[in-house]
Length: 165
Image 1 (cartoon, helix red, strand yellow):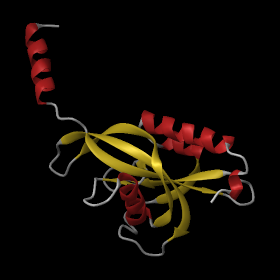
Image 2 (tube, helix red, strand yellow; image 1 turned 90 degrees about the vertical axis):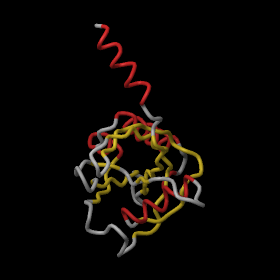
Image 3 (cartoon, rainbow, N blue to C red; image 1 turned 45 degrees about the vertical axis):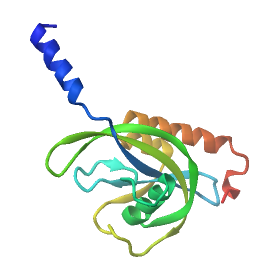
Image 4 (cartoon, one colour; image 1 turned 180 degrees about the vertical axis):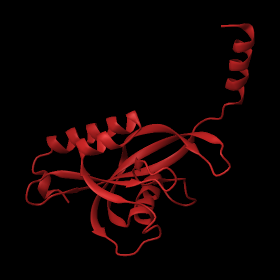
């Protein structure tokens, strides 16, 4: 590593900001007849890649409440949200001005009980229910894939999954 490269790297580290926090919902449902678990994926509005509902902190709302609100605004789903995280993952968000910021996303499970006919971002995204295995194939973030796989194992280990509310 040349001296100039080393200095450039050190300067970049000095100006690096800590990751910005976001909260997300891993929305799921359990099929009554088979007990199979499906998760909700949606496309991002900017790049069209497959993601889960997520957003920035909101004043006066706890992190799991933010995750539930984002799930409703972005995908029109309501349900019971866990207060404990399933895990967290990182990604780079490109802001409107083109600047890239590192984000850390805490993920909460949300068992969907209701699908709204109208919601804030209806028609702005494609929404699809898929198996956990299919979700893992579609999402880009490796840590999110790990969260989905761990969630799949957790759900498979629960007795009488199809009776869970």
